[in-house]
Image 1 (tube, one colour):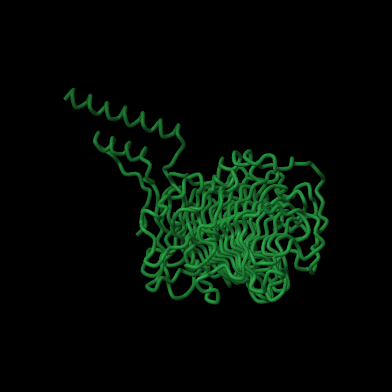
Image 2: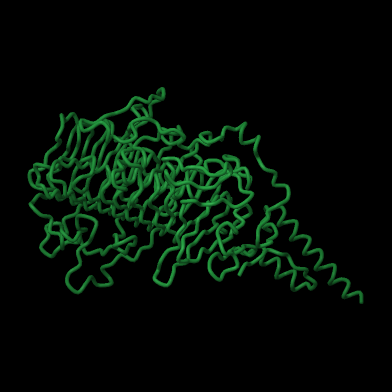
Length: 607
């Protein structure tokens, strides 16, 4: 069923009043719902009028046995009250609808650049007309979809006919966007599962939650990752990150954002689990006050044997221009971090001594033993308190020029006391020394308390509150479970979900630890570790990141081949244009309705 936006004729005063109330209500009165799939009004995604989607619209994609093979462009500037939602409707066995990039087609009339960068694109286009930064797609949710196979050697049909995907193509490619939510999707078999470009600081307030990202990357290439993101304000939560494709050398979660929060995720394997580096693509990122504080908590990080790099986390930069490195504090707390490597493991690589890590309430366990576990690489300052670590852990496996401050309240041992290590059940056993062993968080981290914990897989639950907090990502519950009054019931606040205006204040709490931003020329010298140079990811600037000029997208070219949109939106549903005008138009309509109402009332009195 397709709900159209046709405006009927109103004859009575009561109808006019009802119309007025509807126009000014919070619900999307004029929104359309497009149902796609077997037995629905639209049989395929190419039938959806992507060029005319309006605030409040919904596209419901129903599961079918065969995949959808369509390219999607989303340019809608929706609102908080009337977001645009693209939602998959699961099959009888909870199968998600599949959108496959292999041999995908593009709806006739659509014309957008960077088509080779993704299967689903949020960003600019010629038709529908959206030329960032004047137009920035906003308040968009994509959920419950399996999006796959955007990479070479696969091809698609676009504005230039049959075209190959770029190596750094993504299942979802956000060229520019604000208030974007990617939820409960499976993103795999692409160059990048998810790619988000900062677009000169215009991309902001992103929520990535409940997704499964795995099996991405390009063989023998270090530049493609399960996710690669840069934004001003971004939260990752309740996601499951799995291994990359065989032979691919990228990282799991790579980020260049300001205002980064990584919480309650399960991240395993990859060259590094977390690669949190400099915002080299836009000055707006290192200039953002939120850039100097990064919060990583409540996660499970697993480093497996055979992965390229023995460093689990990298924080700082890799462009070679150290003036734009993060030069702040990585707040690392209540994570469960496990390495099953036979050789050496390094917990954190801090790029320079201007990078700090505040490490509290974590469990860090290397199955190879403490002599194989180092906390830092060569540089940086680490403050550690109330963590569990292998006995005999080391400062570094390299020439160490940094500093580790141990407050003497950390625990060591041979085993942290997991319920089932071999089965990856990292919940605490009753005899674990990590129970009730936690301490206070840093002042800045108090803004992000540990209220939830991860549930296998892609879900979460309230974290029980039983006296002193336990170490690691999971709170112990005795046999029979925790009592209801022992469980946090807080729902994440709007400030936590939407990081806008939320990060600037927290930096002041630890201002003494922060370094002033230093202006410097943009360098592209690589930064290499003492390990194999080829696995130090992204040591040169990526071509085309956040630039719309890498595929016939310079301003002159875009203007030359723009398609006229004078005819208004069209599509198979025959919907008319959205009635969601600006405030002045609505106010004028209100007065017209009142005048009409009183005019008819006076006429009735005269008769």
